[in-house]
Image (tube, rainbow, N blue to C red; front, side, top):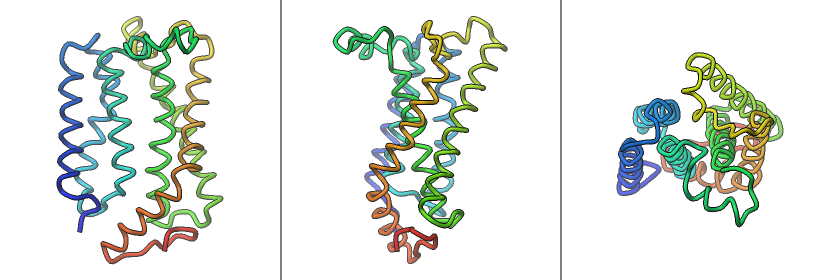
Length: 218
């Protein structure tokens, strides 16, 4: 029995493809679009390939879709020019378009829940405290590596990578990006762990398996 009903799988795929097609129609800059959307394009075949052998929980699938949509919207408009967040600048008192900060929150939250699922189900780390510590370290490392990728892209392409960087003149943009990723990681672990455990319990039960890690749902 799959973790999501077939209709939900199709809704997930259709939503992904529909947003991807919209995103690819006359984006602000095609080079920036490719840079931003590539992680989502890489994730899709991985999810399809592992769907039957190692299906994930519905929560994680929804979070991955949410993150992919953020990447596609950012790729279409560039992170500095998403209209909704331009409109929010005045009522929120922002000095810049902060859509990129939403992206970095997701960059912490979504990998944290993916990593948590893998660590629990594969029994990689024993004990909830050590598992959470490892997840926080992993997500911070991932965020730092992404900042390095942005730097390498800027060095390789010069001004054409400015929209990908999304700095908008903010001196501490790199550091704040990593802070938002950290906030997303911690928020995911604090707010979603109980729901995540319940879904893993149901998933493993439906597949005739059980969690093996210490502190995992049984």
